[in-house]
Amino acid sequence: MPGKREKELQKLKGVGEILAKRFVTAGLDTFAKIVEAGETGLEKIKGVNPRFIPSIISQAKTLAGEVDKDRQQKVEALRQHAALLKKRLQDMPLQLKERFQTELAGKTGRKVEKELLKALATVEKLESKLGKRVKKTGKELVRAEERLISLTDARFKDMGKGLKKARKSLRKVFS
Image (cartoon, rainbow, N blue to C red; front, side, top):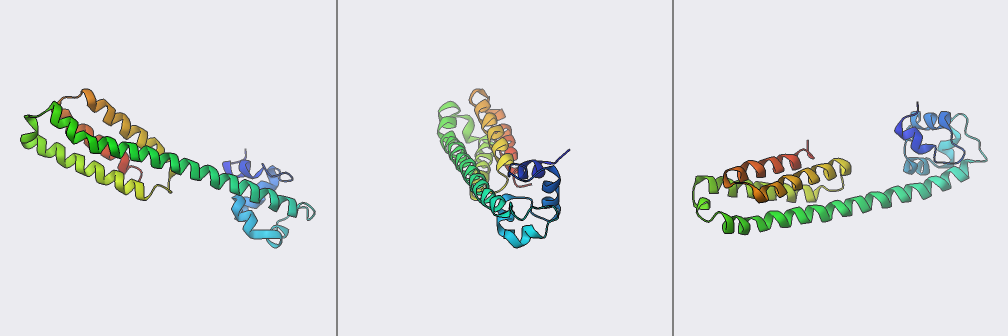
């Protein structure tokens, strides 16, 4: 059964299952690498019909551009999601002040404030590294946001724990 890379390469007309495996074995596992290898690189691979090489390279250029564009759109969506999460965290002190005026002054209030600052710092760190690990970043942003939303009804004692869990979700992106 072909792997994910081989399946992707089979989108090229003239490249079947066997040829896709040979491309991957030769280190040409992405459309961009096929374009980079050029005609001379593809001629070295057993089974490639020399007449199809220009067509394969042309198709790979097109598909490589689509992959890059799709990735850029995903990164932009993640950037917007992270900005919303950051805004929610920045608005949280005001909400906490309205809901828990007296509790904020004590030791628990300082812990909650500390967790809030740590969560904000983690979101900012995540924003700077958004281009990497797109899929995992998206999952963890959603998980962190769900945890923050669940805090809207939470008691004050649970706020610190909830913020810590949200921050841990975001930190999973880096590990």
